[in-house]
Amino acid sequence: MKQMYRRFIVSIMLILNVYFGCAQQAPSMEENIPFLCTFSKNADKSWGDDDNVQIIFFVMPVTEKNPVYIKIFDPNNGGKYDEAHGPFNSKTRFSVFGGAGAHSSDDAKKHDPVGNYKSGVQLASKIFGEEAEYEDKWITLGPFNPVEGELQPDAGGYVFKVVVEGTDGDDGNLYRLFMSSSKTENKPIEGGNMFTYEYSFRLSDQKNSVSHLYPFITSNLVAVKVNVFDFDNDGLIRLVSVAKRGDIAKTSGDAEWTVNTHEVVQQEFNTSFDIQFIKQKDAKNNNIVVFITNQYNQLMPFYTSPIGGIPKYKYKIGVKVVNN
Image (cartoon, rainbow, N blue to C red; front, side, top):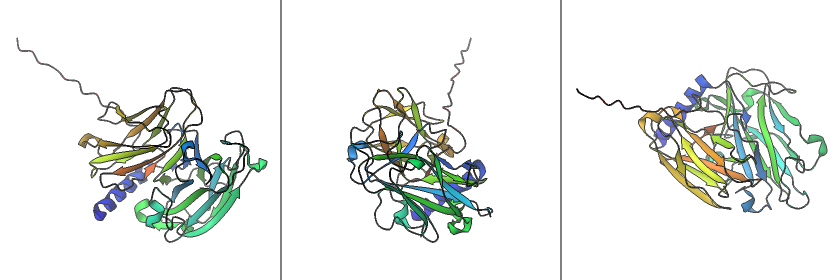
């Protein structure tokens, strides 16, 4: 089973080298997600964060020799984007890890932050409170030498891990991430990409808006399980693929998990699924958590842009022949 799962990861990474040159922003435009979201440790789970930690991986191609930077948009607490519960009292730590174990450690790839999930060598760390100078701005961590990441040939190069932790307080910090070749601008790195095993994010406040996640379906998959936390019954969850017109999935209520299993058919091999979160209420500040597993309950890495493009349902038109 482990060997099969290894082949699954290798297949994804090889395809990524073909399709991805600039998938280095989280959230991406294709996802239509306004912000990532991490609440501090005293926050109520019903506000939409199950564990107060988010882990994102950035991959540098082995051919990259120039310094790289991890950029964070609006990292402070207490501004116009963040979610307050009473007076703002929160702090958020952003840390970058590389070196041996940064990605290869099993604890780094779990959907719950347990054990040694901060594996590897810490390269940078900064705690943000309510500092006004960081409001509505991009700040930069680095520079980092590409070889400071953990060499993971199956992942396509050197891997850096960003761990975001809500420490003091009970508020929600909303932010974005970008891997850049420039200290002052958001410039994607050719051949680079990013992925995660669990995503905590804010849905759009706009009614009828649709947010998307795009897991890639390799030829050894039989089923995909989509785990969603705290959707607040805010609308519909629908899955579209080249073979599925729009499977409607169960939604989760307040501080609840729901699991939807979707069988994989041959036509879907080597394409992406489009998991859609369709907002149908006027409620604001809906934060959710999503992770995806295969038929063995192993976490699937998923990327912020669809591999091979956004999937479109392929209509089958039947032709009836009438003999005269």
